[in-house]
Amino acid sequence: MLEKLGERLESLEENIDETAHAGMLEEIHAIRRELIYLRKQVWPLREVVAHLLKGDTPFIGEATGMFLRDVYDHTIQVIDTIESFRDTLSSLQDLYLSIISNRMNEVMKVLTIIATIFIPITFIAGVYGMNFAHMPELTWRWGYLAFWLAVIAMAVSLVLFFKHKKWL
Image (cartoon, rainbow, N blue to C red; front, side, top):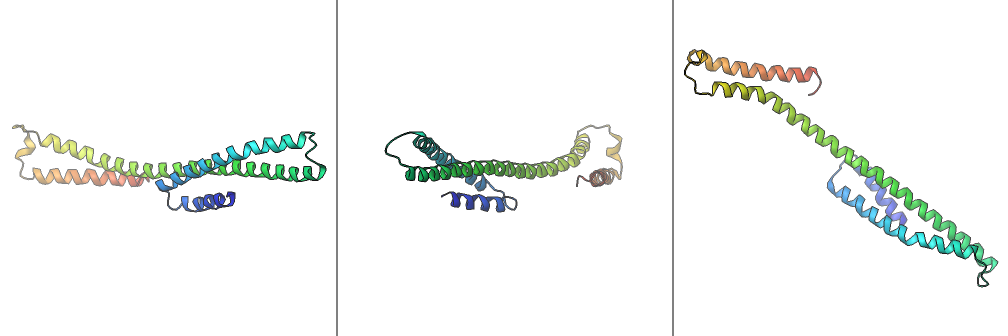
């Protein structure tokens, strides 16, 4: 059972960098529940075997004691393996959350850049969209063209600024 859990962990570890998706987080939680269940089952066994090894009962002879020590060692190994798997799961969960966070940061960066480009353009369009009768630019023959040239120049200059700062 521990070998199968170990194989599932290795598979998750190999795939998490390439394709982190919500199913992986569900798999991590499922494995964690199984490990907790196993630990609850094995931990009392360790105590029972330790008690049998310490006790002076007439039912357990010298030859049986040797086998009980072997069972005790295997029980400790299983508990250590479970704890190791739990540590690995915690690391995998941290890695998964980090990858998802980095993806979200990239999306937020793109959305912020788009918003930063369109906010000044929206401001200019809002000012010239007001219904004032006495705005000198409204009567210019080339006013519409000047508006579009200003908007395009502003957008291009912001994109160049972002590239210069290596944000794009």
